[in-house]
Image: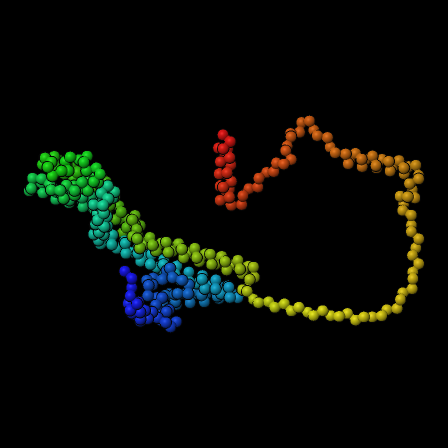
Length: 370
């Protein structure tokens, strides 16, 4: 539906009333609205609870490394920011581990049942995988047993199941709509004895799995969690560990870059102005003409003077014979393998992508030749 001109003008007037902060201080305050812990914030956006720690780290690093130039100071700021956030992240990780340890001692079953309820919400949409996940824990098996017992009581009272109860039984078994026809018992017109037998078998199977396997494992998991070694860490703990890995990488990269720049003696870009000197005119000096110098007579070369002697003639003949032998092309050896002069060994590509492309081209050429 097209917007009228009056409506468009009204929208423009209303938009002018909600433009957000306009001053620099107001914009800086608005940037802090979405901060929770500040572990993923930018270096120029330091949360208030980390500003003192960043300043302490920066002062200690400046005193230890003595940076020179703008670039080195910026790298030291990056290292200080990452170090302060890394310390705070490690504090949060220890707090999360302590919280999981305390909850394992005080409310272990309640936390596990909460996780089971979150999994069971997806049972109607994906019964196969959800039922299997519920059978992985003792609390999930208890949740399944409670539903089977409720269905068994309905059989005793109503002498059968309606369509809703048949769907629930199919979901508890992990049977989807596509496999529902393979189970004739899951039908409102089915015999009551068949339904009683089905509910009893499923309840016995779940109970056996819970008692024999899952309850001992649950006891071990609770003991480890109380000691601080959770087999299934919380999502917040996993997120903090990812932040810790990222901050440690940023710190190491910034410190390595600072040491490299420090070793190369780089102090930041400094403008250099080269002055081009003006050409200096050489003074013209009138020198007197030099008197002509008599050049000495050319000396006859030594080879020409001794060429007529017989011993020297024999020596020159021997030298010419040796030179002729050296200039003659070598005869090919009969046992030498024939090598095509146009063959050149292919150079190895510099990176992995180029090597993979070369190997693919070789395989394609071989397949074409076949």
